[in-house]
Length: 182
Image (cartoon, rainbow, N blue to C red; front, side, top):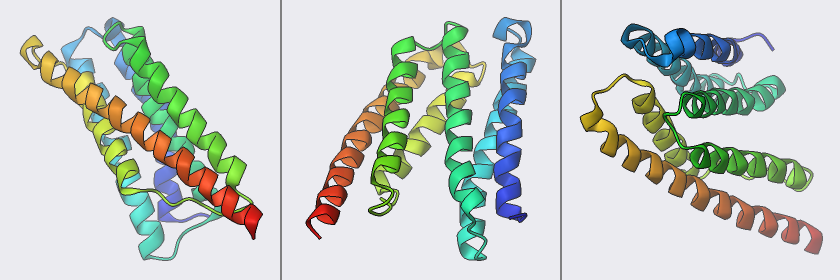
C-alpha cells in the first residue's frame, strides 16, 4: 500500500486544509497570501497528474489508491469551490452544480460497481482540466480586467461538467442494463 503514487494522493489530501487556511488569510484579500493559496492549489493539482500516471506505469495501482485518489480530487476541487463562494468571488450556483454532479457520479459508480467500472472518458479529463484551470485563475489575485475571461472559462467548466455527468449517467444505465440482460 505504501508507494509513491499513494504518497502523492495523501499529500494532496493533506494540502486541502492547508490550501483553505492560506486562502482565508486576511479574508482572502492579501495578494501575497492569494498567490500562496494558488501555489498550494497548483502543487496539489500536480500531484493528481502524477499519481495516476506513476501508478499505472510502474504497476503501483492499489485498492487504497482507487478509493483515495477520487476522494482527494473531489476534496481539493470542492474546497476551492466552497472557499471561493464563501469569499463571494464565485457564484454559489457554480459550486452547487459542480458538487451535485460530482456527488451524482460518485453515487452512480457505487450503483454499478458490481456490474463493472466505467472508465474515465476524454470528456471527463477535459472537465478536470477546465475545472482546475478555471479555479486556479479564480484563486490568483488577477487584475479585474481578467474577470470576464475567468468567468467564461468557469462557465465552460460548468457546461462540460454537466454534459459529462449526463454522459456518465447514460453509460451507467447501459452497463447496468447489459449486466441484467446477461
